[in-house]
Amino acid sequence: MSSAEAGLRVLAVANQKGGVGKTTTAINLGTALAACGERVLLIDLDPQGNASTGLGVPRHERRATTYDLLMGEKTIAQIAIPTKVPGLDLAAADPDLSGVELELGTSSGRSFKLRDALAPLRADQGPERYTYVLIDCPPSLNLLTVNAMAAADAVFVPLQCEFFALEGLSQLMRTVESVRGNLNPRLELQGIVLTMYDRRNTLARQVAEDVRAHFGDKVYTAMIPRNVRVSEAPSFGKPVLIYDLHCAGSRSYLELAREVIGRERARQGLAA
Image (tube, rainbow, N blue to C red; front, side):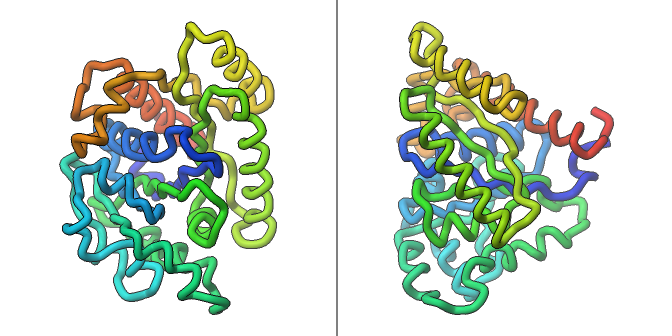
């Protein structure tokens, strides 16, 4: 049985600390999942629009965006566009998204705009339906991040192997607990992926050990190494798997995707 038969899994890719490889992971995990046969929608919920740029969609081509979605002016079907990656669609973002918090003000249901917009995807039982939605969150706790977590089944956390990693992670987990208690009781921690890992660095190895000691099997076995090709790929508007399929970063993201799919099948009690 395939994961497509288990229904949609919506993951908020989040970390309130910037520079941890969050958008890079959203782009490349989405690409790797698609390469493994999944149907994936990447929702860019960061006003910087880096996920959109990294998938080769320039700003002048973003005619309908996640701003329009949250403001109720467009549906998810109207803003999702195909990317260069077969099986991966994109809901793009632009700087207008930064005005959502002000424009929605204190309107009722302001925290559930994305959840409501994604409802048709959850109801879709067609053969071409999405099996994963990845939401690339901004690196801060604001209305956009709250919308992502209110809409998600789980939070997927990229964590850089550096000194303040656990401190930032504890802040994020408090946010998850708050959202679970007030907005989305089903929200859980999907998992943590260690990024920018350098096995030659003693501190990186120690951080990895500490995170695994605290979170156990919630930490993925696959780790994303520091890799020049991963850093270069966004400037060419390509996921690293398209930019250089054989580099260490691409191999790691494919390993991560297989692990995500395997864990999801186990969670659903599906045969591999």
